[in-house]
Image (tube, rainbow, N blue to C red):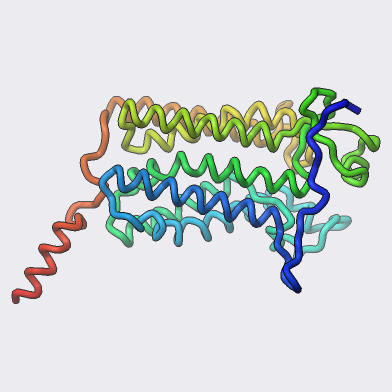
Length: 296
């Protein structure tokens, strides 16, 4: 055991009378609120109206949560289904116990954003570019939920910042009591916050548009997730595909796809969108249209 370690919280659930307050859920909620707040500020700076990113979130957040859980269940289905599954099938719905796959969350969250943008008359790419940096902050805060749940930590290490876990958690992971581990939750949180700062700095200097901020988000996140994933020891259904974990391959593929899009987009449509509204949906145009109907 190392002399200095990061302790794991003794409790991940607090009770307010009969109501449980779960740290994992709280971290997710705080992350969502932070992402919306950042998105609102960026959206107004882009020329949008205050409150519109909150309205987009009404679509994107539920879709994203469903997508994140579906990805987890599909990639780790043997946890819940089949002979000898350690959990009951109904537990596939228990998102408060951990298990949200970021890839599914981003995919279905984007679907929700598409629907919201369409309904509100907004251009999709400016919406995604606006929200992307704040998602990194949400992911960073959400990782602390893994800390409270004592899950998704890395390989054993004696580094000064090693993570200590409860005796039961160590034994369940197949290691002796007192083993300390890489705090991968902290690595990813710090990486995401650094990536957020980089994206904001780049956007202020270069005015990045046409979906390229989203591409930068994907590249920044997957670059970190790829190497952090190699430290993790949690079981996944596809934990060795040609010598690499499934999420490492996913990171590589998404990084390459995002980099290709960034280069092609930069050549085709350099610069920044002049308007965040679809044609005919600008506030002035809508107001003018309303005045014409009233005059009639």
